[in-house]
Image (tube, rainbow, N blue to C red):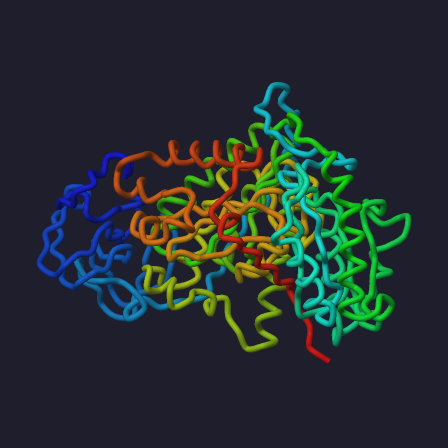
Length: 512
């Protein structure tokens, strides 16, 4: 159904949305009460149960064990007979892990030629060719032992008048850096912090340690370190403790600020934008409004040589067969699938399942299981080829649509995207997730009008107008695209104005 045709006032014809001809359920656009009469594609349906907005209603008889389709894809099997007009959710829809016959690409999709004439934004061009959308001084803790002092250092500048072109001094405290197993877990933390220190939105940085932790600051220093001329290393043990480190760091930062203040925004092709994609607090409208609209934006970015990065491996499970078809070659497809499979092994070690992902809020919003959630989440990536697949916090170098292996847990996912080099993040939410990042603007896109109005201070864009029939998916996609350019040029997002600074590295190993 073309959502623009849906009038805002509920009628028998528009109170439920039938997304695909194969679907044997429709989505309640508004709350449905028992006894209401619906018309779904011209077929009369009487509502037999109360159905909350965003939840599914059966539009055909579904025998026990029969598959239920949404988006034209399987999302589970009926636990018991389901009559037309019945509410379909966790009480009568079971989850089962699906086995796919993957369609691997047989050829090679070449990288497209860089377009010559593309829109520009006003950003900071860095020595390595990347572009910053902000200009921060970062104070990064090497371990938990330095986390409090890092916050003190950054906080000491909160009420100071900063030089022009300096967006602020931001801290990156965390609870990691010691008690790690030596190997992949430590290496992933080091990759994450190195990505933050050398991020294009960071003009200069301090790496601050206690002095005796596993994650030694020497790993980040030296002439071969990225942007070493903009990086200062310090430890509490060699600086006189917390107070001494605070005073020493302030002296260093004042000098770094002089360099940062001399940097100016210049016109930069939008091909330098690396947009991170994330969803949190998803609801059933996520896959109908905000995520497809963000997919339109991503296709527009790819057409202009920019990059869009889909994350959240847990929320690709059940949709991986659709993404594999889009891979530019078999190598990329197999690396992407390898992340799905290794994540499954990771969960199995702890007795977990991908279906543990939907939260109570997701389910209240109409999402029954991870298959349904993933099919809606994957819509964020638009329709262009999957050009590359990278591990958590790995440097992103490819234009177009890229996948990054991250958890679905929002602060950890955003941290990986940031460390990989995303200079703007677009975040869709149905339940109203409140989150940001210390050095990267995060654009919040509400999937429904109720959340947008209820949490107006947190939301930048209302994609709920799609379900209300006021705008098309294409129009909201263009609105997101235009805002990405404005934000990249300095416009502040709601999360920035509220001071959100969530930063949580992914710890994958045991605590020692």
